[in-house]
Length: 340
Image (cartoon, rainbow, N blue to C red; front, side, top):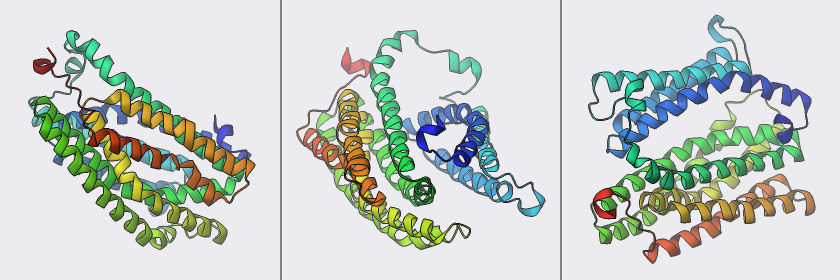
C-alpha cells in the first residue's frame, strides 16, 4: 500500500514501520470518538473538548520524548510517533470510561451497554448511516489518492506536504467545531419539527462559516514561519516548499469553512445525507482528482499548482450546497414522532 504513495524505498520502509504500530490506535480512537460524539449530540461538548485538548498534549509530549529521545527516553523516530498516537488515543478512551462510570447517566459505556440496543432502529440506522459511512470512506480514498499523486511527483514533496498539514490540522479545529455546532443545532430543530427555524439556522451557519474560513485563512498565514521553526533539521528546499503549500492551504481555507459546515453540519444534521454524499464524493472524484492528475502528469505544473487543482472541486461543492440550503430542499425528518 505504501508503494502507492511513494517510490522511495527508505520512505516506504518508514511508512510500514509506522503503520505496524499505529494500527492499534484505530480501535481505541473509534470507541472514544463514538462516545464523545454521543455526548455532543445531547449538547454536552465541554468534556469532549477538554479530553481532546488533553489528548493533543499527551501526543505532543510523547512525540517529544520518543521521536528524538529526550530526557533519557529511547530515540524511536517514526515508531515513537506511532506510540505517541497510541498513548493519546488510550488517554481518550480512559477518560471516556471514567466519565461514563462516575458522571454520565444517560449514555453508558460498558460492554453490556454497547451491545444492548433497540433492534427496531436497525433499518433506520443503516438508511441514515450508510451514506455517511460511504461518503467518509470515499473521501478518505480521495485524500489518499491526492497524497499518492503528490508523492509520485517527488518523494521530497511528501515531507513538505506533511509539514504544511500541521498548520492545516490546527485550523481545522475551528472548521470542525463550526460544523459540529451546525449538526447539533440543525438536528435538534428538525427533531422539534420547527422547519422554518431549520432554514433560518442553515442560512445563519452559512454566514458564520464564511467568517470562520476567513479566520482560518489568516491563522495559517500567521503561523507559517512558527510551524517551519519546529523542523530545524529539514532542508531549505523542503521548508520553502512547505511554506508555499501553507500559502495555498490558506487560500483553500477561505472556502473550507463553508464546505465543511454545509455538508457535514447543515445537510447531514437535517437528514439529507444522500445528497451530501453525492455532492462530496461526486465532486472529488469527477472534478478534483482528474484536474489534479492533468495538472501533475499532463500539464506538468509545479506541485503547488497541482495541490490547488486537487482541491478545485471545493468551488462546485459550495455552489451546489448553497443552492440546496437556500431553496430549503434538504430537511428530512427521521425522528419517530414526526416520521410516523
